Amino acid sequence: MRHNYIQYNSPQFRLLSDNQIEELHLATLQILERTGVTFHCQEAIDILGEAGADVSNPKRVKIPSHLVEQALRTAPKTITLYTREGEPAIVLNGTTGSHFGAFPDTHNYLDPYIGRQRKCYVEDIADMARLIDALPNMEWSFTGSSHLTIPPAIADKVTVLQLILNSSKPIIPEINDVSSLKEMIDLCSIVAGGEEQLRRKPFFGASA
Image (cartoon, rainbow, N blue to C red; front, side):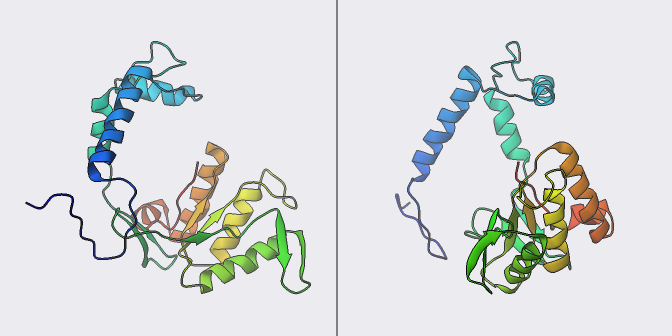
């Protein structure tokens, strides 16, 4: 058997060997189990406690190694995001390389017609969504959650709507709270033809 030998089908960049990665993993398991981690969400603490974590000190939840290992074993090994038409767009499995996306909404916008920077408006988000949709090297869209020209209560939903209307590529928005997430899921479910269809071929992810 050959040692310290790695062969890939595509160019790869690695800073750590498999042994070093394993050492880091074991160290994180030790920290989670012995030192613990702080949670600011009581619901998360309750769920972890029911699963077997040590929540005797709510300010420092200790998660046994076997819970982490079980989660890793049962988590999907491959996640596929689809286009709005239901075609595979991104396959995440640890071997397909990096997938680049773009940010269509921002506080400031460099207007290509006047050559000056100004505030970003809804129509600019729509233009950027169409540009991302046309660029073959951009595979998905990431959205922010704050804007200078859109009311904060609806800013994230407005951006998601513009992406749905102007691009077929997967959307991964930043989530402010649970209610916003539910509203976005409802919106995307309508587009997909129902929540079950969205689950089967998701074009929507989330960054929390």
